[in-house]
Structures are given as C-alpha cells and as structure tokens.
Image 1 (cartoon, one colour):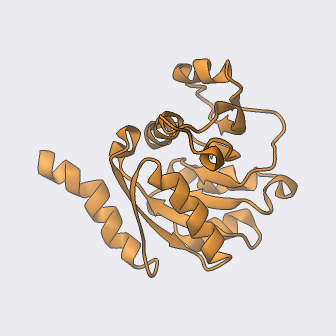
Image 2: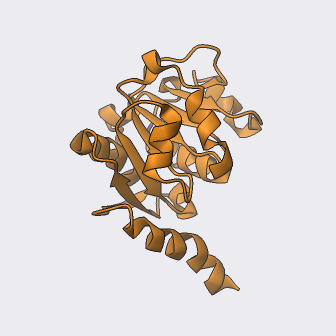
Amino acid sequence: MRRNHDFANLRLLLIGCGKMGSALLKGWFAKGLAPANVDVKDPSEPDWLQPYVAQGLRLNPEGLRTYEIIVVATKPQFIASALESLAPNNTHSAVILSVAAGVSLEQIETALGREAAVVRAMPNTPAEIGQGMTCLVSNGVDTHKALALSGKLMSAVGAVEALDNEDQMHAVTGLSGSGPAYVFA
C-alpha cells in the first residue's frame, strides 16, 4: 500500500478511545497514519495500543503537542471536561472534530471557551474496516480548512458527506445510530 505523506504526518490528538475512537484509530492506522504523530488521552489505557506506543504513539501524555486536528470521541457527558482540559496555547489553531453524538456545535464552542474551527461528525462503526459513512457540519469558523482536514481524516475510513446545516445532523444521527440496531432487531 502506498502511504499518503500528508495523511501519515497528520498531527492528531484523540480524546477517548472507546468503541468509536478505537474504530477510527484502527482505520487511520490501516490507512497509514504514523503512530509517532498521534497522542491518545483515555483513562482506560487500552491494551491494543501498546504496539503503537512502541512505534511512538503517546498514551495519556503529560504535555500536549501542537496538533492539526483534535478528535473528541468521548461520551457526550464527558465532552465539556475533555475540552476544558486542553491548553489553548497547544490547540489554538487545531480543528476540533467531535464524534460525540448529540453534542451541538454551540456546546462544543462553549466548552472550549474560545472561538475555534469546530466540525461535528457522525461516523458509523464500519469505519474500522474502511467502509464507514460520515456526515460533517462546520460551525462556520475557517470552514474550508476545517471541512477539508476533517474530510481528509474521515475519508480514510469511508465515504464522507458535508451537510448544509446542523439541523440535518439530527436525521443522520437517527439513521446511522438507531437504523442499524432497528434492522438487526
């Protein structure tokens, strides 16, 4: 597989490495994201990350680096504290990409306490095998950069579609989150 140099060198912080965070990270590593450019903050310290730690991934680092994108994959009730813990000097130019279901762009901006390029995404678990579908919506701050970077990241794990407005995300959340469970039931 030929590695995409820009993608491989993307400086990324992943906050939350549960089911969705893990699915995304595994997909990104499979597509060539370099572990040495990735920091992961997760209190459970997943064992499956250890081979990547040996390749330079930093798990629960004390100091944060400067990132191009920060992916927030926590449960919705933890997103505010996760974002409040970020040091503004390390994250001021980073795109904030949230995959937390049901957390609005406004809630993310409020938790950050500053203006930032924020993208809300609704991926699904087939992202782990590169067959996901993700819809994105931006808060309007540096929209071109925010959607381009988020789209590059999410297209590594499947198809991507940008939405016109956040109201459309409700339908996507219902279909992507509840639809598969309904079909299997």
